[in-house]
Structure formats: structure tokens, C-alpha cells
Image 1 (cartoon, helix red, strand yellow):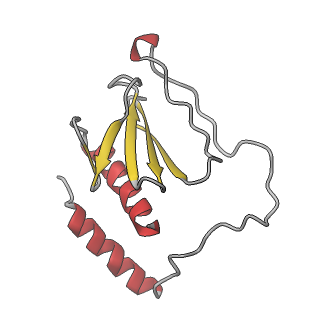
Image 2 (cartoon, helix red, strand yellow):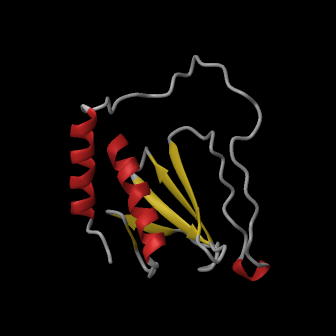
Image 3 (tube, rainbow, N blue to C red):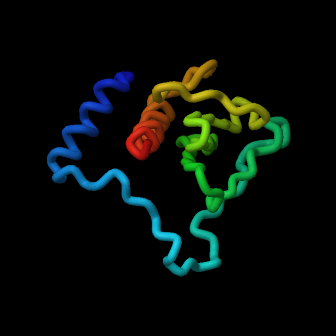
Length: 131
């Protein structure tokens, strides 16, 4: 079943009210010391016929990222750009070559299964909240 984006946003509002409206403007402090080891690393599980996967630099400022692998090992990468207010999705099983535009929590030009669609909506709601 597909959860409408409006309903998902309403659930988000209700959760914020229950938590006491935690601050939305919290930004990570750039004064904090960082550790040089990777936080997350994953290899490409797709064949060469799927093309070259996107290179993701999680330290790039102004971008937010998400990663998903379904139960078959098919991988997906979500990228949101603060500057343009646009999001894209790359999927190995759809061919890594081109990103697919994400609008209002839905991916243009692709049919996703329910777990993939739920993950995209969660990514979209997370970045929408930060806007």
C-alpha cells in the first residue's frame, strides 16, 4: 500500500508535537573535531552491465545522502542538493548511468516496490524537514 506524502507529513507533524517540537534549525557544528576514518563504506553489488555507480562523497557540503539495499541486494542511492532544492535517485538494477528525479517523495519514470518507495518517502521527509 502506498502511503500518500500528505499523510506521511501529517504523521511527522504529530511526532514533532509529541516530542515537544525539537529544533529544526540545528546545524552540525564545524568547530567539532572530526575523525578521519570512514563512517560508512559499501561496494557495488551490481554487474558491469549496470554501468558505473555514482561516486558519493558524504562530506560534500550542501548535500544529503541516503543508501538502501533491498532483500535481493539491489542498491539505491538518494542525493539531495540544498542549493537547488532537488533530489535524485540512482539504482543499480535500473542502470547506474542516470539519476532519476525525486519530486514530493516520488521517483519520476520508475516503478518501485513498497520497501523502496517507503525508503524514498523517508528520505524526502527528512530533507523536507531540514528545508
